[in-house]
Amino acid sequence: MKFASYDIVFQEVPDEVSLALNITACPYRCPGCHSPHLREDKGIELSTESLGELLNNYGQLITCVAFMGGDAFTKELYDLAAWVHLKGYKTAWYSGRKDIPENCPLMHFDYIKVGPYQEEAGGLKSPTTNQRMYKIQDGSLIDITYRFQRK
Ligand code: SF4
Image 1 (tube, rainbow, N blue to C red):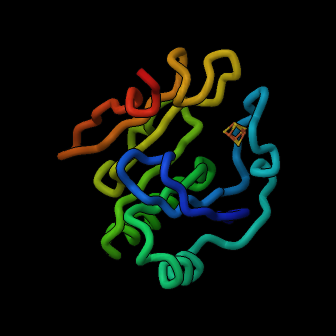
Image 2: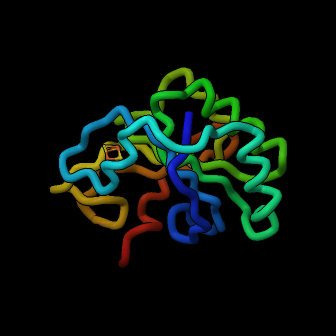
């Protein structure tokens, strides 16, 4: 599992300052894809070493690590999310799947976004979006998609 880039972001996960990792080798082919370069299997290996280095540099600034993608490497993703939790940060997963995989260890995540990008439905900010953002609390999924939408 590799990542092409990273950023410190404020809007992707409500109430959190997140280190967002843009993971490559996206297995989907959404029409109107906003990041076609993420479909290639390229970038820096995402491991406890590389992520540890980023946390050394930016750990004071963030409250959460957001895995943007990683659908092709769920086992690695789950292990890394567990490791991030042990470091004391929250974790978020932006998945392009329709639903959360049945075997997903919810305890390793605080937020999971699901739903492929559908141009006509729009992203999380769109009132017609097909995507959902869940907060995971005590093993339950709470739909917080409304937090992205203007009243
Ligand atoms: S999940 Fe994201 S990166 Fe992958 S094809 Fe769809 S829009 Fe593009």
